[in-house]
Length: 69
Image 1 (tube, helix red, strand yellow):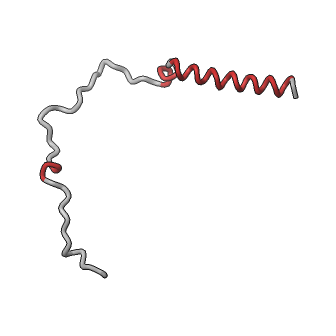
Image 2 (tube, one colour):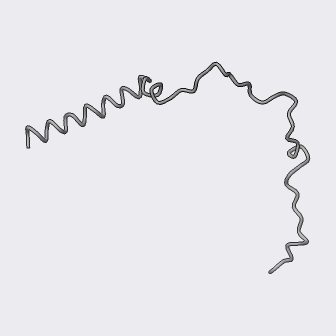
Image 3 (tube, helix red, strand yellow):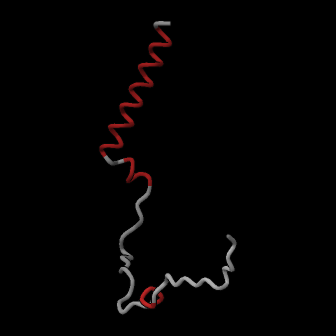
């Protein structure tokens, strides 16, 4: 049942997988473009609609708690 694992050889990595050099340079960088921050994310319409709906539901829950309970 027990085997000597030193005698078992598995070769998974072929020589084409060991080649890591590239003929061309990696993806070009654009130094003039600034990274986008959280204000860009907040300006997206689907996110603003979602946050508006959540805010409206919280407002309705607060009004219900204050005036109807």
